[in-house]
Amino acid sequence: EAGEVFQQLGAIVEEVSVPDHLMGPNLYTTIKNEGAYCQMFDRNGSVAGKKGFQSTSCIKAMARWKQYPDRLTTYSRITLLSGSWTQKHTGGVLYGKGQNLSRRLISSYDEKLKEYDILLLPTIPFCAPKLPLADSTEVECMKQLTGIIVNTCPFNVSGHPAMSIPCGTCEGLPIGMMMVSSYNNE
Image (cartoon, rainbow, N blue to C red):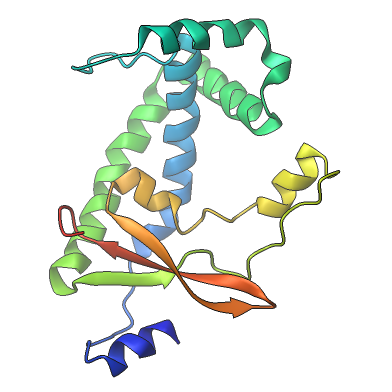
């Protein structure tokens, strides 16, 4: 329905497919887990090879996190444990494969964005879940939010500019329409 509004305003709206979009969540998880482990725990937030300012006070503060792992959220602990395991058992090869495959994902979006000014898709592919109750456990919260980033995280991998705009409601909760553009075409 949101695309129809653009049509009424004179835009040409067509349904297209980017099959590689489906590999985005797996690439995101692979890159994020090992990347978070290496950068946050192994390097205390410093970025190797990065030119420019690096906050030494932040690096010192992040180094202290290792002393208090019980203060991290369950999600953070799972991310870091997964990243640690893959780093230990693959020596960075899985991370490298994820980065290499991300080039295919980027290329797939770029090809469509040569034909179209923007790509429109739902921010999440189902009705938004209600916020967890205040007394919900972390595991209950994680279960409730499973799959919520399936359409957004591929663009964290590709780096294409993307934004979500409220465009309606589903069961009284907001629906977001995500607009994705080519690089430097925000």
